[in-house]
Amino acid sequence: AVAAKKEPLIEKAAKALLARSSGDAMRSEFEAFRSRADVKAWLDPAAMFNAIDKLPALVGKDWWDWPTEYRDRDAVALAAIANDHKDVIDLFCATQFLFHSQWMRLKQYANARGVSLVGDMPIYVGGHSADVWANQNLFLLSADKKPSAVAGVPPDAFSEDGQLWGNPLFDWVEHKNTGYAWWAQRLKRTLELHDEVRIDHFRAFAAYWQVEAGSATAKNGQWMVGPGIDMFNTLKPTLGDAKIVAEDLGVITADVVQLREEFGAPGMVVLQFAWGGDGRNPHLLHNHYENSFCYPGTHDNETSQGWYAAQDEETKHRLEAYAGIAYGDGAWGLIKAGMSSVSKACVFTMQDVLALGNDARMNTPGVADGNWAWRVGEPGVFDTLDAEAHKLASLATVYDRVTNPDSESMSIACKSLSKGRGGIFGLGLWFL
Image (cartoon, rainbow, N blue to C red; front, side):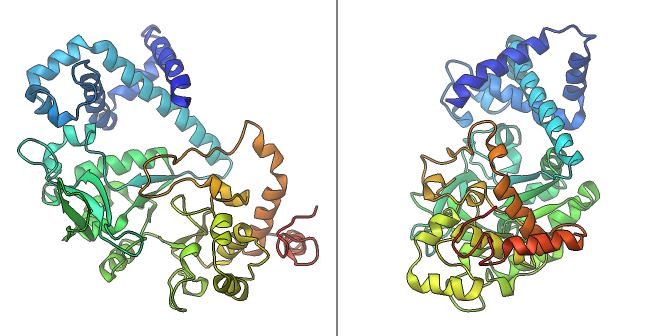
């Protein structure tokens, strides 16, 4: 519904940009963006891919099922597309520029107010994409250009069949031969748009699960060795001290931990995972390490309030004994616990700040429909959240997540958080 309403408006804005004269300031800014070598490297093939993908005879087909001259990127055929469909290509590029310029203004606005933006980058890309079509040598493809092997994860306690993602896998030998140039380009662009980035499924850089294409499940895959620290050492002169967070959840072995530590990237701990097993569970607060990001739950988890409601009495007793979480206050109890962690950063969802149940869950892995539909509210909703903002500010002050708080601020925060004195815990209420 959102796309149906907004895409025509975005197209209208892009056409208006293209209609401006060559001396116009915004048109000049667009042409400068489009001519940047680092932008052309991804924008030109993406625009060409989009133009071919929209040809009436090819709509709905994967690129490997296109006519061979398009599939194999024949220079004469692509030149014809560039000439015959120049308007489509220009419109695509103008749309990308509008996003870029608006996003960069948003980023500058946030940065000027002390707010950093953290991006989230999946390690794999979609098969039917300009990434794969334009860089076929960098992926494991068959002679017919279909993926020969695909990504997934092996069976575990949550799925007896594993998870079959279906993304084409990288040809890491070829990536090494090219000096990991594609990765340098991808990460540089991501870090232009964000102040730091979390790489999803970081463990695949150490070892990844390879499944033969056409398999019905991920059961019969095999572990393959990833590029390891060689890739990050090769990219360091290009990326410098880029801030990269490693999503290191799932089946984590010693080689993954070694790679993350050698690279120096923060890992992740998730409090919802802490209560199974014994005291050595790495997600328990006393096992956290400073170079990590602590989450009550991620976008793939239940909301913390929904998660707490589903726990058995034994787990709830443990939560109360260990972290003082009781009386159904799962969301703010886990936020408080996360703030108290030694992890260098604490990340929590807006659903948890609002103490919402599982009807507000963002994503359920392995379920195709109904995800990413939750919305925070109508415009102006943040003007109604002063109490929640005060809670977060008080917790950040008490747990030294605010730069040099003065004694008065600390005193006020401590009084606000004290049980039995109008604090936020105990009965899960907030008294002003």
